[in-house]
Amino acid sequence: MTQKWNLQDIRPIEPRASRHSVETRNNLSSRPLNSKSESADQNNSDLEILDNVAVIDGAKKSRWQLFIAIFIFISVVGIGFGISFLTSGAEITLYPKVRDINVNAEFTAYNSKKDDALSYEIMTLDATGERQVTATGQEQVKTQATGEIEIIKSTPGTERLIKNTRFESSNGLIFRIQESVIVPGALKNKNGETVPGTTRAQVFADVAGENYNLPAKNNFTIPGFKEGGNTELYNAIKATNPTAFSGGFDGPRFIIAENELSTAKQSLQMELRDTLIAKIASEKPANFTTFSDAIAITYTDLPSVKSGDTLVTIREQATLQIPLFKNEEFASFIAKETITGYDVKEPVRINNLDELTFAYSSASTSQVNLANLESLTFKITGVPRIVWTIDQEKMKVDLLGMEKTAFTGVLGKYTGITKGEVKVRPVWKRSFPDKLGQIKIVEVLSTP
Image 1 (cartoon, rainbow, N blue to C red):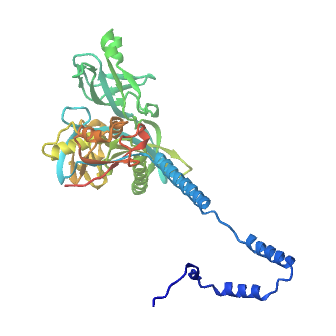
Image 2 (cartoon, rainbow, N blue to C red; image 1 turned 180 degrees about the vertical axis):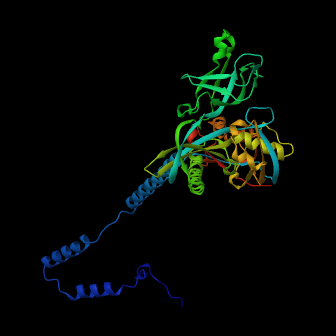
């Protein structure tokens, strides 16, 4: 027979009590409840236990964590923007044309401008020194000062000046030319400007004496034109001395043993030479090329001075001359002479001038007054590195505020560059800065 169940007989299964719950219930059931006060005390005790339990609001905690995360994110982004702003700019890397050319050839340069030719200027340095030697006696000596003048004619037409033509200095001293010369007249250059005619002549003082040893850059006129009433030629022809006059003396001169004098002079001249060579680097103008082997030095005896009964102080003057070539002009000339198809309109430079060897074709050139020569012939040996150059400041101006995509078009204007690269900071910026100081150009040299 099937068993039947009443609803009241069905009860929910009680969950298994924990050990602590069982012990607590047993303790409570074992204690007698004698009064209402004990029941109240028990209730109060239970409340005290509940008060010591910390209650945490999970939703509130999550909100604070979100706020902190947002603040940190905004701070990091702000700092990133600030750094990007401070380091913003553009860096352009340029790869110019470069050629390494083997050179072993002879060239000629001129002391005046000529079409398709290399020109030079002369830098002159002077130094004096002295040595003491023993004198064996003295003699009376009279010598006339000598030197060179540059004669200038400011009007058209040549003029011949005969031997011994007088030139008068600004302080009234008379000098005469040693040989007759023809002074060329002024001409018009391709720009329509009047260029005076010039020539040089050797002169000697009319009278012996030290007062005729004039320093360089004195002005001279021809008194004979004025005396003859030829005012036009007197005003048109002037002269100046590029270097100092020397050799003038009138008085007793000490006699010194030849060997002792030669040794003292040689020592003194070597000292003066070293002094002048050391001055080249500091005296050379900027943007000029020169070579240490291009120097020419001349020595001049100055009047001796008695230092006692037998001691004499000899004095010597050394004059160093060295040709200077403009950097761009020299590099362009070498490129034109050695690179097939080179366009002289493209500016270039030579990066390794100190690795080239310079030598005069004639060894005697280094012992003469270079100012007297109209041209210099020399040999260059080595492997000059010729680099095409551009006006970097102009390129920066061309790129100011331009879109980054305009770089290729601007680069195409500079034929001396084989390729270029650009980086703009911050990376998301699409245009070049609008300040020159924020654009940097880096040059990378590489030979094909």
